[in-house]
Image (cartoon, rainbow, N blue to C red):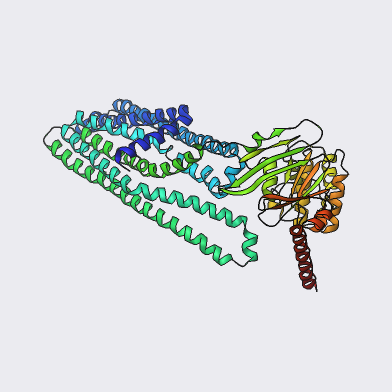
Amino acid sequence: MTNVGRVRAARVLLTGLVSLQRVSFSIAVGGAMIFAVGTVASSVGIRLLIDDVIVPGFAANRLVFADFAVVGAIVIAIALLRAGGVVVRRSFAGRTEWFAARILSDRVMSRVLAQPPVWHRRRMTGDIAARAGVDVDAAVSVLAPLPFATSALTLVVLAVVWLFVTDAWLGGIALVVLPILVWFNITYQRRVDRHYAMAQNELGALSEAVHESFDAVLVVKSFGAEDRETKRLSVISDRLRRARTRAVSLRSTFEALVDVVPSLVNVLLVAAGAWRLSNGAMSVGELSASVFLFTVIAFPLRIVSYLFSELPHSASGWKRVQEVLGEEIGKNARDSLGLLPPGDPVLVVDRISVSHEGEPALRDVSLRVNGGEIIAIVGPVASGKTTLLQAVAGLVGLDSGRIALATPPSLVFQESFLFADSLRYNLTLGSDVRDDAIRYALQTADALEFVDDLGASLDVALGERGVSLSGGQRQRIALARALLHPTSLLLLDDTTSALDPGTESRVITNLRALNDSPAIIVVASRPSTISLADRVVYLEQGRIIAAGRHEDLLASSPQYMELIGAFESDRRSASTVKDGNER
């Protein structure tokens, strides 16, 4: 990046960040300016104290208390002014950073939540979390030192002017420092910004990988892949460490130079001032005030350097945040679903086609479902069963065709997700639902008995992802959750796969017995489930090959009969393995 590009990027970054908290930032800058003016005024107070009180006192061999009291009061007042400026600057600079981080994080999360499901499917959860967390923190990290840096630059200008007024030689020496520091900063930025950008990207990659690893901890442990997963994370961590080490090494060298240059100039300033003093060109107070002032501005100059060193880091975080905020909000597939009048049918799927990453998933599929009807969707792996349910639920967009529904459907996913919260929250998702309605939904899902066995109220905590429950229990909790949100169409994506045939049969029977029982579309791979359906839709390679009653398809469709035979064989094999393990 060229110097012009860096300046433009810094301007965009700072303008964008300051706009988040203009008032508190302005107050912080105001406090910083008071500190800068107070610092220069302190050197004037020191000159008065030495030239008008201490030196005459030594000459007269006595101290005039009245003069000392007046000048001392001036020095104390200036010190209190400086202290007040520091308090205001620090308080409001911190407030600016904290509130800017909150605003920016809220914007990222709002943008993320506004995106349709297909957007989330293309991104890793860990990367999204990093952009709303560590990247936001990195972006706003430049805000706290920024007011101090502005006061430091003001202080340098005022100090140089004051030194020139006091003595042109001392002012000239001080002025030499500024181009040297500017050269240091430009050289540093040119070398370090790419390392910080790399480090920030690696931090996002590590966050993504760690989230993914923790999410799949049971899979990792069950396959004994702990060492391999540790090695994978170690490789990413090592890349992050190397990028950070290079950046920190350059930063430490830069800060050392910033420390050394003002100190060397201070020595030169003392020597030149002593020579000017011996010639009678300046007083002891003026020399002391000049040395004090240059000593005092050495630390603020480090803050300017710190700001320069933070800019690449902050710019990297800002860029990653803006990538999310700058993305267009995609079209929500649910908005394109049509609305049917009350009554039958409750669902009409008319010649829809769907593709994933350019590969066809559904081709010219049509389906009509009436109220209370149970439809089983059957087919081999990757035949489009789950895609069909997601299309009906509005989670994937259509390439062509249309879908119309009487009411928004409720979808129970194959993998039942439970929050690390109470049973009540997992069922109601924060909605205000009566306990008797919750218990009725649990009873319908054949979950009331094991919930009562928990020996606690509906406010019992389930643990992360419902870890204390079995797979079948989690599926029934998820089904009860769907039942608490009234609908005319219930979509079950192999939801009863973890249930034994008896429990599954009771669940289907309970669903049939519901008042105004919803139509049910269930993706099924268990013959016992398929046989309970009123109608079976057989999918293959994204097309409906056959549809009808289970018995009729067995007699009329060789492919269907072969698939059911394979299902039966798999069930018998699984049962044999289970019995063998139990023995």
